[in-house]
Length: 186
Image 1 (cartoon, helix red, strand yellow):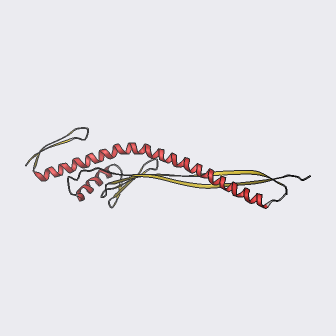
Image 2: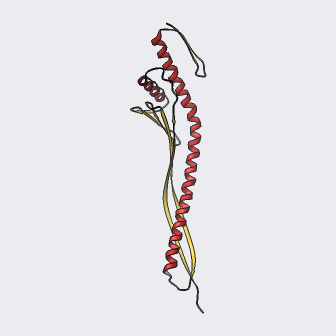
Image 3: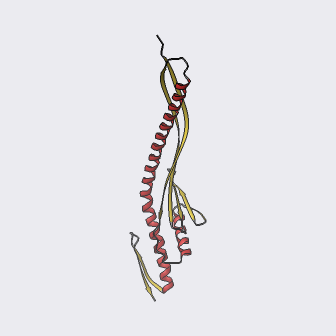
């Protein structure tokens, strides 16, 4: 009668996972003044709102780590978020063999355990990515409203400059909704 042996294969790993997510959109600004002037108006308005300028690119990092980047010349807005997390994963498997030392079973067991560790780390990475995406989506809602205000201010300033170049401004009326009425004597 033969005996059965249990072969136990176990591995544990600590890994640091990094995830990033981002989205890019285009600002819709009417070019009522030359492009160079529009870039300056946009940069000035964004600087008032805490953006730091490096060339034509203005960047602001939010309290929650979300990075907002506006390329004033191209009119693009890029919003990025990221996270990193250290995860501990432990997997253990037990196999039955007819011998006390079975290299084939140990090799298959090690490979299976390694695949299971990779799968669990991938699951944790995906969960972290989903958390980052949710954070990004929440910030986008707030950011859209702010960027709409910026576009309205830049357009209003551009219209005022254009009106001045056309003639004498008699009256400028702005309401709280971003509407501007300009009366010009030509």
